[in-house]
Length: 281
Image (cartoon, rainbow, N blue to C red; front, side, top):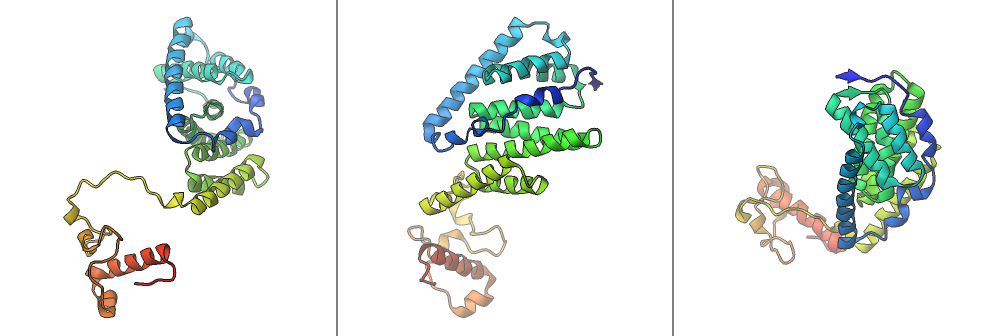
């Protein structure tokens, strides 16, 4: 792999990173729900693909430009609030890095900045990938520039958390913000994100949304399925599908000693406590 020398990609261009709430799209979390939000994201991704092609077509010599020049172009768009063009411009930079197999000691800063642009656009999956890539590269760069890399590492944690919030993965976001606060206890972004994540977790608990599980149907035959993955687990067909209770009541001796039914008894007890807290089976 080759390395390209030149101006840094980071310190001069970090000034446009705002600490305001709008950068992370917190206002959009409650508005973007259901199919409409997903359709908007897909439409936006299609526009970005078209815009990237247009940028590369209008600048056929971008592969000969230094990385610092490509980064400066993207930073100017981002400073002006044009996140679509900023993402397209960053795509030229990363295309050159990939095609020419280049490295740069501050490439993690560019990932961090592009994650900000994706967050502003509401493309949380892309922002999550960039923030994680930033953390990975920043961790490797800590030996070269401890102060700058540490700052970006904390910022990347915040962006990862806000991306998870946008994806409605509130518990994961809460864990990320909590970890980020251990690194920087005074970070306003971390504190705001943690409060938001915890608020959404409580709202989900109150609405019962957290009990819903999205999963693909098993490819195994129904009669071959078991409650747990343990080899001694009870078969799933021993449970009534209408109320998830066992077809046959267990004796106390069975519940305590027979491993083929013990997990069934424990599972039903937990189900009973969750659905009817004062009833036990």
